[in-house]
Image 1 (cartoon, rainbow, N blue to C red):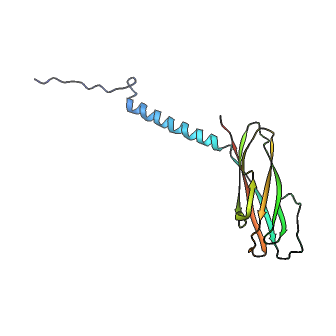
Image 2 (image 1 turned 180 degrees about the vertical axis):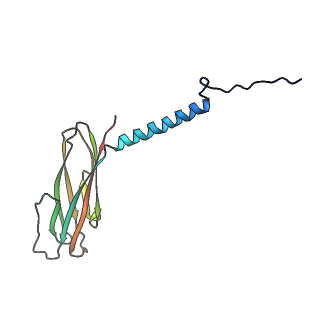
Image 3 (image 1 turned 45 degrees about the vertical axis):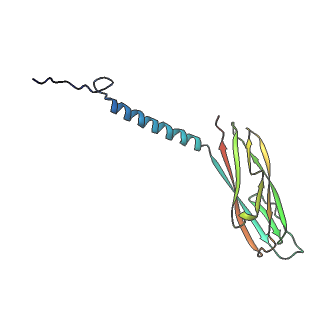
Amino acid sequence: MKTLVAKKRLSFGRKFPIRTAAAIVLCLGIIATSLIFAYAHAWDEEVRVAMHLNVSDNARTMGFNVGTDALWFGRVPPGAAGSRDLTVANHFAYPRDVEIRAEGNITQWITAAPSSFSLNPNEGQIVDVSVEVPRNATPAEYDGTLIILFRRQFP
């Protein structure tokens, strides 16, 4: 005579087997993680500032432009340098980290100092943006973009 043994499934009540509970917990964990990353990166802000430079081999003239719509380095001869000051400010109610980088055909010639720093609320930082034109640079118009990336600090 055979004895029948009833197998009982592990569950959280009649309608909630352990596998279903584990799947729900896993899905909630994935959703929570996604929301945390989305929230953290939602506070990033990128500001792009155009940069213009005229490399001229006429050593007798240098030019400048005081326009505020871009960083204008003006006319700079090969082997010379120029710089502009830029004020970066945090107008938010929380601290932010700032990173500055350049892109475009003058990227190799551009230096921003400081290029990475933190700003408290309503604080500003003067950044010296310099261009150093190589001696062998071809006279022409050069353009680039200064990218200022703001990131919210999280405790």
